[in-house]
Image 1 (cartoon, rainbow, N blue to C red):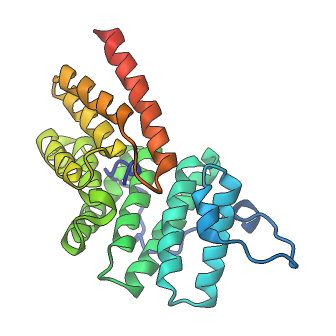
Image 2: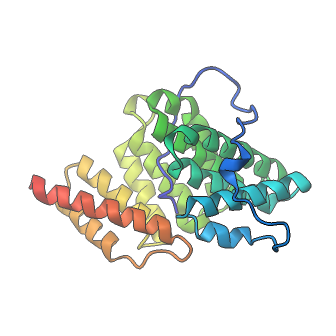
Image 3: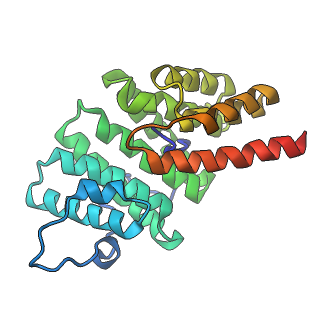
Length: 260
């Protein structure tokens, strides 16, 4: 899913080639200390508890350590890029840029190890989209072509990946990118409706679609879509994201009611 998602319009940053190693975040900010006598925690269980940022940081530290021990560990690289995306969207503001840049770097590692798997491609795009959303249009324009290319690669490799997440993210991309740079409400709606064919109750897709419907003056249809979002059972494994989109959906529905 991609609530996550975020939002995948991209931006023009200070010039570099986009492939530098991302700045390191101090280890103390990523991991909790674990006594040496205790067994190593399960990073998957820690990530499942990601609403506790300390738990998410510890998961990142463990996957980072595994990848350092075995630079060919694709699974750890893929999970690390996903975890940095979560941290980069929820950590204190001063940490977010570095975390998202580390997410891009981990995604590039995953793609180098398994170029024909969708995980690395998708989470590179997600982390870039997180930078665009958090740091403005100039940041977004820097990455807009690469985000779209990575998501198109996911569509080519596995269009059903994460319940149609590439179509979901492309829908957000077309909605957020200015028309002068390729944005289109019609294409946004097309991709979002396609994503819903994989998961009709996906909260992120429904929320993003509601925004497109509002932008195209279909208020009643937007309200109906938000009601469906609020009634959604959500996706297994995506509870924190589903909760966030339900909160946002409720607020948007209330605003529509107030606005008439």
